[in-house]
Amino acid sequence: MRISDAGLNLIAEFEGYVEHLYNDPVGHCTIGIGHLVHHGTCNGAVSESQFVHGISYSNAVHLLQRDVVRYEHAVTQLITVPLNQNMFDALVSFTFNVGIRALEGSTLRNVLNMGLYEQVPTELARWNKAGVPLVVLPGLTRRRQAEADLWNTPVVPIERRHDLLTREYDILKEEIRIERDRTNFLALIVKGHQAAIDFIAKIVVVLDRRTK
Image 1: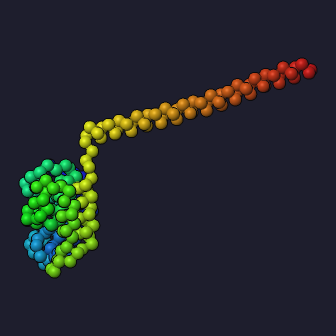
Image 2: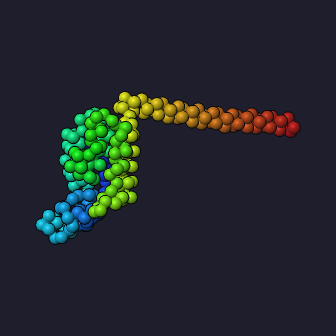
Image 3: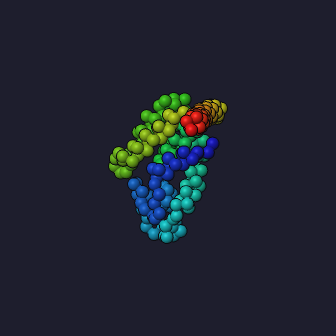
């Protein structure tokens, strides 16, 4: 399974885009959309050299798409129960943020592999701390909530999606028909008014002749 555009957008939203090298909240050298250049603060290391002039947004997106592959594979390998697309996306976002080893040793993974899907949002919420000593970060709290919301969002089956689109199309056709009928009705009224005006004009002509 591959992450969807919705999953990538979720990661990009919380990672943000920074065009230059910077130290992330836990002190690792980063650039673009959460691309880890190396562990530890930016210090002029060789791995930083390709980014000394920054990075464009399009290249940052390309790096994100490349970076996320290993996290997709990790979720696929470490989670043994079936996942829908939204569940998979939420876990890839989570793993991208906390790391593969964290997912591997987490209670979240254990309870999920036991089939306790409903416990995942609670386990996600626990991962809202970072730093030494650990402190709650509001940004992580918001991210865990967004991942939990995505986890809990049902995926509309393709067949059901088709049915919904068909229904919307039928409703639209009916609205168009009603509007067309209304337009035709108004046209008939206008036409009727013109016919009445013409009839009255003829009567006026006849009466005028009789009075002469």
